[in-house]
Length: 410
Ligand code: HSE
Image (tube, rainbow, N blue to C red; front, top):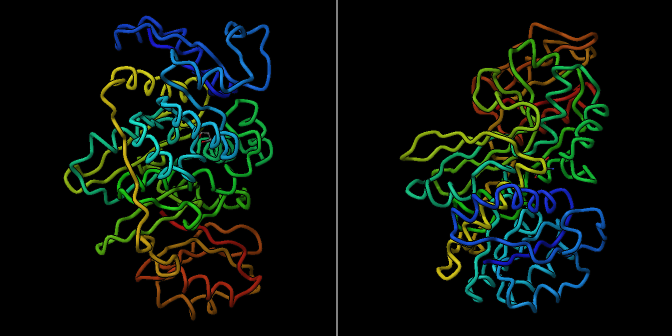
């Protein structure tokens, strides 16, 4: 028998208990062990819960119990979760987490500590919810130089954009639906402003480069300024509007990385991911393209990835399988955002004439969009030659309030 403990009995933590209960026979068949949840750490009590008798408020009940070998951290955040994760590793427990904040902020340190203590530190559920992506990227695609990682890494914003597009409901209505379904974080700010996707992209980029990518340095924009007018243009161009996260390896081995709302062709494979689904397109120099698709958030899909890590850990208790170690790079690997090339849909108010737009943007390629909302005109800019982010930003700021919005094309 293998005893495990769960720290944090919220949506994901209780999902882990549920999957362990539902699939206990399968887990035994796959690992050779019966896997028992011995303790659950939470500040709350759950008297009516089937696992209510395992609740403890004292972390030492877990760390000083020699019978508990695997600890799952589903607390989230970087304060208490960080402290308890360090304690768990120092106590020689294998550690499994769904906590992307923690991996993105303290990954190198926690991985090094795990190695020092000769235990596993697994985090499959930190990116893509139930979609297998961490282990495939680390193992199955190990023969490749990964040139592109692009896709949808946040379920909440994808749900909101899908509902605004298909049901014509407002941003606020769609957000409240996402919260009631348990997709959005309790405080959805970091879903909406792109930070959550940034952290996940940084984790994937760190795995493929073997170097720690600091998510705080990735250029990001969220979806809070998206209007139904933007979706109107998306429709007219046969495109969808998605919050895209993208890592592009450059020939000099630096990378362009961005998280931002982008217009993407309706027939592009990434655009097929609607609702809470995530889609992650990987391009490797031997493999070509592969796409990973599925439920990127939610109780049981996320628990599915956590429990897979428990199984993997149980199968390798005495042969530790470090997933990766990320070195802190000596030189910045991110190219300056201003140097990246860009194409965009730009909406101008009627105060600015088509001739004025042409005068500035013709050199980069500028094409008016046929469908127009009232009192404005929209253009595709940067479609013929290389336009940099810096050039686009400076021309747009020179037009001041005559520019209503700009949305990048994928
Ligand atoms: N809030 C996250 C999302 C949960 O919407 O994708 C999964 O990380």
